[in-house]
Length: 133
Length: 144
Image 1 (cartoon, each protein chain N blue to C red):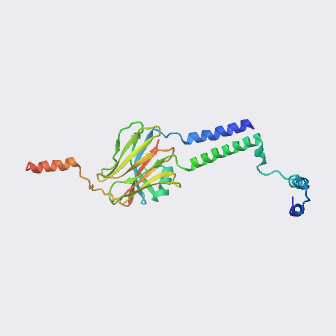
Image 2 (cartoon, rainbow over the protein chains, first blue to last red; image 1 turned 180 degrees about the vertical axis):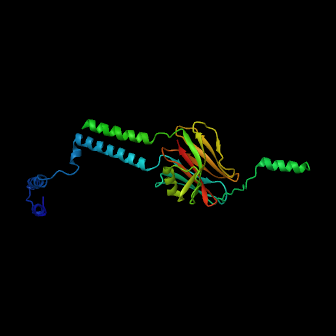
Image 3 (cartoon, rainbow over the protein chains, first blue to last red; image 1 turned 180 degrees about the horizontal axis):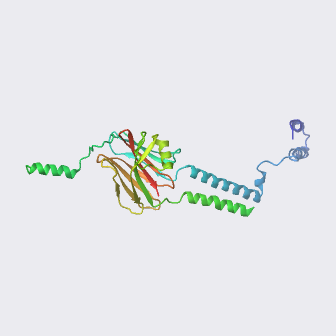
C-alpha cells in the first residue's frame, strides 16, 4: 500500500457514518486495510517449523560465537601480587605474544656478587668468633 | 539438511570442548637472559618461536637460556627451581581437575611476589625479573 492509497483510505474512513451503518463501514475499512497486507519479516515464526528453524539458527550462532570467543581469550590465566614494599606486580595477557606476562617493577638489579648470605655461613662465622678462633 | 546441521553442531561443540580441555601434566621452567648484545657462540638460545614471542613483550634481541628444569603437575608438593642464588622460584601444583600452579618469586632470599598460573595449551608465562648486566633475567614457564 503506497502513500496515496493510504491517504484515500483514511479520508474514506473519516467520512461520517450513517446511523445503523457502522458495522458495514468497519467491515469495508477492515477489508481494505488487511486485504493486501504483505507478510512481515517475522511472519515465519507463526509456524512451528519456522520457529524451530529460527531456534536452530540461534543455537548454531551461539555455539560459533562461543568457540570464537574461547579461541580469542586465553585458556590459561596468571595472577600476581607483590609481597615486598617497593615491588609492584602486574599480570596481563599479551595478545601479540600469546602469552601470560607477570611484570615486576622495583626489583634491584642482579649482580654476580650475591647480596644474599647463606644462613649456615653466618652461623659458622659466629661460632668461630665465639670460639675465639 | 538435518545431517548437515548435526555435523555442524558436532563440529563446533567438539571444538568448544577441546578448547576447554585441561592442559598438559608437565611444565618446563626456564631462566633466560635477555640482552641486545650478541651472546657467546656457545650459548644456548631460545627457540625461534619463543624468541619471537619474548621479543614482542620485552623487546630485547637475544634470549640466552641459562637453566631449564621440568616439573610435574601431578606431584602436589613444592618444587624449587634455583638457577641463581639471588633469583629463584618456588612452585607448588595445586590439587584439582584443572592444573593450577602456585608460584613464589624470591630475590636475594626474600619473597618479592607470588601468584597463580593455570597452564593453557601453548600459552606460556613470562615473568619479568631483575636487570642483570646489560640485560634482564626472565623466567619462562611453558606447558610440555
